[in-house]
Length: 284
Image (cartoon, rainbow, N blue to C red; front, side, top):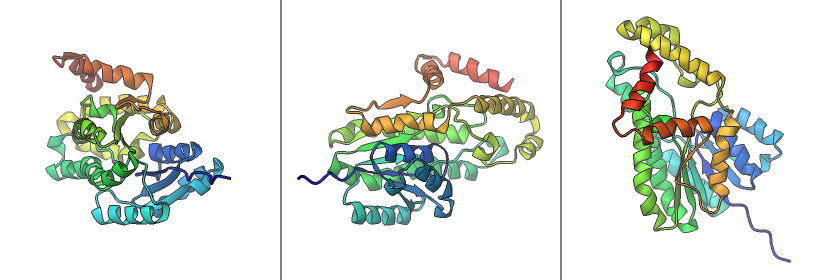
């Protein structure tokens, strides 16, 4: 009697909530051994409960990994390889929102946003590529429709996501020569609490916005409304599982019809007028 093959192993960053949590559970349900990482493992309760409810707690292993801390990346990978022997896929999901405009913020705010959302992806990718080459594995990165279309009051966040898109678009053909498939997953709005997701005091921000207050108020009202009718976290995470399991994953995948239509506006807008007309309406 042959011995059953061990499940493939995927490392997912940013799994304490949102798309990362949903992706970890869905990947485990698809039969993957999931190494679910987060900066603070004390926040693993919701993931553990979701995995238990789905009956996949034995396939979800929580580890600490902070994408801006190279030592924590190295430690996590060393433990993963010692325990599982191989790494078949990585999902770069960890990130943080940032709302504001440059005149009202600081260059340090922009650097911090780039550090988490761009350089964190770069550091994880650099560390895992040798192992993905060995397994001829897959590198999946969650960006955003904000990595294709720049959006008002999201200058730093969109800049970081644009950078990730350019980085991965450039890396993909090189990685493919070594057998590693690269995929970008682009969600739109995902059902959540908007204020909590960006981690700011919106009333205070509006008070401090000065000449930009009317535009910010209009933007916030429009965005809160869009979040209230957004797709679920599981719906947004489903394309990640598909990219893990399909024979030939696409390079760029949007997570909803709305996201596909939104991104298409940019990709057919050679002079930029369509995007400017669309996003100008968001700020009144």
